[in-house]
Amino acid sequence: MLAIWFALVLLVALSGTVSAEEVLKVDTGDTAWVLASAALVMIMTPGLGLFYGGMVRRKNAIATIMMSFVILALISVQWVLYGYSLAFGPDIGGIIGSLQWLGLNGVGQAPNADYAATIPALAFMIFQMMFAVITPALITGAFVERIKFSSFLVFALLWATLVYDPIAHWVWGVGGWLRNMGALDFAGGTVVHISSGVSALAIALVIGARKGFGKEPLEPHSIPMTVIGAVLLWFGWFGFNAGSAVASGGLAASAFVVTNTAAAAAALTWMLLSWRSRKPSVLGAATGAVVGLVAITPASGFVGPMAAIAIGIGAAVFCYSAMLFRMKRNVDESLDVWACHGIGGTWGAIATGIFATTLVNPAGANGLLYGNAAQVVTQAIAVAVTWIYAFAVTYILAKVIDATMGLRVKEEEEDVGLDIGQHAEKAYS
Amino acid sequence: MRKIEAIIRPEKLDAVRAALEEKGITGMTVVEVKGRGRQKGITLQWRAGEYRIEFLPKMKLEIIVDDKDVETTIGTICEAARSGKVGDGKIFIYPVEQVVRVRTGERGKDAI
Image (tube, rainbow over all chains, first blue to last red; front, side):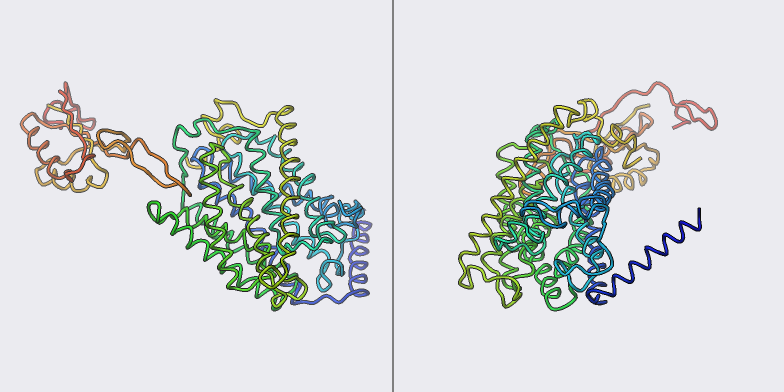
C-alpha cells in the first residue's frame, strides 16, 4: 500500500518536472519575487483582523479578529478546489472561467503565458489566492459586533463564489469582458476594493445597526492594535501592488515606490483633516494610510510618484468626507468599509484613467492628462458595473441568508459580546 | 473612627499618597472607578467626527482614621489633589463601627 503511494508521489513529481521543462522557461528572480509577494499579501488578512479588532469594543475583539483569520483558511481551500478555475480558468463567454482547472487540475510548475510567462502557474495561482482571501475579509468591518458566526461563514463562501470570482474573471481573466474593453486595474481597485466596499454597504443595510448605535459611544478598544494592523497592511501592500507586476524588475520597483508614496501622502492629509477639526488623530493617520493604499492599487502599475501624491491626497479627502456622510445618514456600516474601500477604490480607478501613462508601463494606456480622455470613460464603466453587480448580488445574498439562517445574534448575546457568545472565549481575562 | 472616601483625579494619586504618608497616614485602599459630576464627560475623536464619553476614570481612596485625624486627612487630600478645575473630586465621611486586624485579631483604634 505504502509502496503504491510512494510510486504515485514519484510519478506526479516526475511528470511535474518534465512538463516544467518542456514549455516556457521559469525565471528564478520573477518566481522568487512573486512567491515572496504572495507571502506579503497573506499577512495582510490577519493584519486586517487586528486593524478591525482594535476598533471594536473589547467584548468583540477576538470575534472580529477571528473573521479575518478564518477567511484565510476558508478561501484558501475554496480557491484550490474551484475558485481559481472560476476566476482564471478557460473563458466562457467573457463572463466566467470554466471548471476545467477544478482542484488545480492542469495548474502546474510550468508557466501559463496567458498570465505570467516567466513564473510557474502555481506561483501565479497562490499569489492570486491571497487577493481572493483578503477581499471578503475586508467586508467583515461592515457587520462586526452583531453577526452570527455560522451565517458569516456561509456568506463569505457564497460571496467569494458569486461576487469575487466572476468580477476577477471579468477584469483579469483572459477573455474577461471588462479586460477586453480596456479597463485598467493593476492590482485590484475594482476587483478587490470597490467590490468589497460596495458589498459592505449592502450587507450593513440588511443586517441593521448595532444595539446602541447613535446612542452610546461604541468606542475603539485598542488603537495600538489598529495601528499594528495598519502597519501590517502597509507592509503587505508592497506585495499586493509591486507583486502585481508578476515580474521582478523596473515595473515592480515603480509600483513599490508609488504605493509607499500614496500611503504616506494620504496619512499626512488625514492627520491634517482631523487636526483642523480638533487634534491630530492617530486612528485618523492609520486610516489615512490605508485609504491611500486602496486608491493607488489600481493605478500602481501605470502612474509615477507625483501622481501618487495627488492620488493619496485625493483619497484622504474623499474617504474622510464619505465617512462623515455615512455617519450623518445614520447608517451603521460599522468600520467604514464602504467609505474607505468603496470610495477609495472608486477614486483610484478614476484616477488611473486620469494619471496613467505609457511612460511608466508600455503595456498600459495613457490617461486624461496624456491626451486620452476616453480612458476615464472606460474606467467609469468598469466602476459602475462593479458597483451595480456587487451591490445587487450581495444584497440578495444577505437577504436570503437572513431569511433562512438569520444574520444576527440574539440581543442578549450582543449585550454580552460575541467573544463569549459565539466563541466561548475572552480576549482579555 | 471614620471612613474617608475620596474620589480624585487618577494623576493625583501619588501626590495624595505621599502627602498623607508625611502626616503619618499610611493605610488606604484604592479602587479604579468611573463617574461623573460637574465636569460631565469629555469629547473624543473617532476616525472622522467625534463622540462623547459620559463617564470619566477616577480613583477612589478608602481610608479609615481615628476621629482626631479626620480633619488632617481631609485637608491633606484637598491640598494634594487640587488642580483648581472642575473634576477635582469629592470627599465623603462615614462613621465606622468596628475595625479588626485579621492577623492578630486586635480591634478598634489599635487595628487601624
